[in-house]
Length: 389
Image 1 (cartoon, one colour):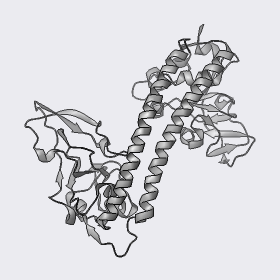
Image 2 (image 1 turned 60 degrees about the vertical axis):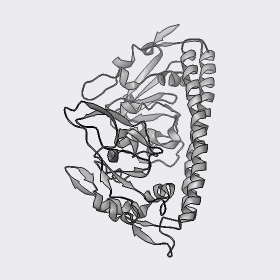
Image 3 (image 1 turned 90 degrees about the vertical axis):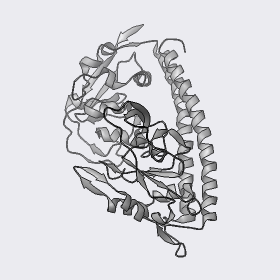
Image 4 (image 1 turned 135 degrees about the vertical axis):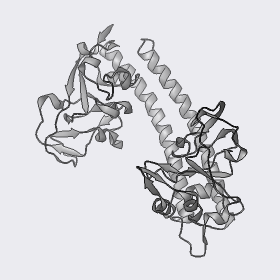
């Protein structure tokens, strides 16, 4: 049996929040919820805390009862697809709304059903996305017995828990890598007998900017985007196809010996971020928004340099050297070349690199397992809401 969401749930729109106090696990009263509260690690599924709390309720239309599903309803926050379950009465700000199921609908079942689609796909509004009762009310969902809903939710909960454990294992491997780095090298500048030298001393050739695509060109090439080097690791899938009037030279193509560095961005924290590609990519060009620095591997190990590059010691130099025009922060080759890097003995660097590569191999194994679990979860979702689980 299928019913519309409006037939089996009540809707609560957010409004102005009352004046609150810092939440410190008070057992009574109301959590004051903003979109930012949904980002708290403790609130990944169930809302158990918030930054602020109130002993008194807010306006009736803004108070969501315990056991409601909370989602963003306005602006870019809709695209984050956050869906959370309240564990106590909450007061919602204007950017949130709540859906409280009737007795014939289990909230965990509702939560998993909502996870099968993108909130932007059902939003209204042109320039600013909006979600309201009119968008949600006509949505149809299957309504098996409450007992069957609970069984389905439990199966999906367990499958999701397995995925969460894999993600945590990957995060722990990242933490272990950082721990090993700090154990050996401290903050990147902790041994007085290790020289601290300009990066330019250890380049095999001059650093160089990438190449911008050409307007009206007819030669198609893959071009890296900045997201290839501004995440947690080098992402070779982050590229677009652009055109050039001439075939880009070999010096503008992705090479595993080049540290590729973000040359400019509106966010200062992205400027200067960099990684080595994991392999040569002769069919891919790096853009003018990146600088390539070809490293002398006899003095610098790539894994060591990538981790040293993210230390406060190096980041402070990058951000101090960045210049801004029209809201864009930039560094140039001169700044890059002058960055001072601690140079431990190469055998210590290589030992660290060996450990990191072992951890990376273990992480890749975990990622493959996670991918299989993701596939399984999607399959279970599909079967669950077609009545075939």
